[in-house]
Amino acid sequence: MATAEGTPVAEAQDLQNDLRRAGIEPFGWVINATLSGSGTRDPVLHSRTTLAQAQLTHVAQVAERVWTLPWTADIATADKV
View 1 (cartoon, rainbow, N blue to C red):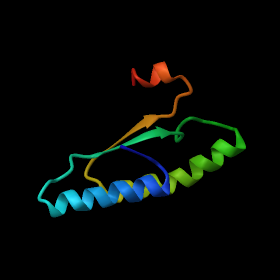
View 2: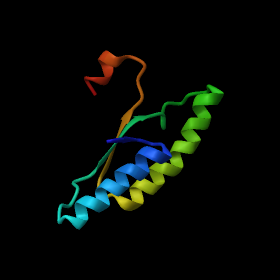
View 3: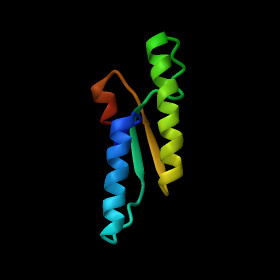
View 4: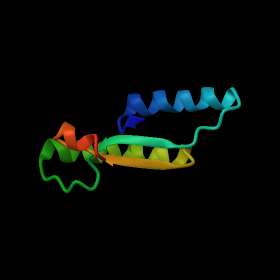
């Protein structure tokens, strides 16, 4: 699981490569706390959404399967997603 930011995606890709070298094929990736599709109009969150889109595009190119979980402000709601 990773967030759609440069460092977590790079670390997850390194892990995927390590697993493949060990003969283990990862089933897929889960991208956590995505703002994509949130419709936010907040300038700061909107800029994060724009930056995250490049990471989501990259993940789609390197992963067999990808799931995204939306960002939520309520931690109790996050457990039910």
